[in-house]
Amino acid sequence: MDEDDKPILDAIRNPSIARVNRNCLRGLYSVIKSCDAHVRFCFLTGVTKFSKVNLFSGLINLRDITLNPAYSSICGYTEHDLETVFGPELSAFNRAEIRDWYNGYNWGGTDEVYNPFDMLLLFAEREFKAWWFETGSPTFLIDTLVECRVQSHSFEGMLATEELLSEFDIGMITPEALLFQTGYLTIVHRERLDGEQYYTLSYPN
Image (cartoon, helix red, strand yellow):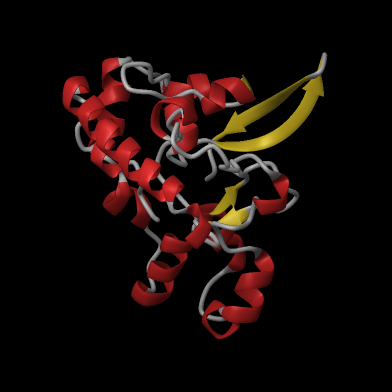
């Protein structure tokens, strides 16, 4: 199930409607839970990471893999993917330039990945452009950043906790969590300090 949060995001500037939509989704997931004997596997993705308590309270057996290193390359193309699947296409481009434009996403694993949407459009259009940003930047993201008067340089190299990166709910959106969850910030380093996991964030490219 892709973009499971779209009904909420479409109304994020109107919290009362967003909450109604969230409750409708909660009812849907409760029905899925009641039929779990017939569900072998379900994979949910969305732009944001809404609280399990508020949205998925009916689903008690979810496994969040957002920051799990074992799945860090599941939503992007690795160097190996490019070489083995798109080898014939690569000869027309400078590999360093491809990396500068589209590589640099990391969710805690050992490998950085390429934005798949950008790569496919690069191969189709034969031109370097910010394809994903031009076609996929949600209005709510721009509006929220303008409202918070965010300065772009303030996020470069910032240190964040796992709790901060997981924080997202209607009426409680921090710019850091929003930018990370929408793919405009990525992890460049992770370390454990005093028993807590910390992540250094930066811009992918």
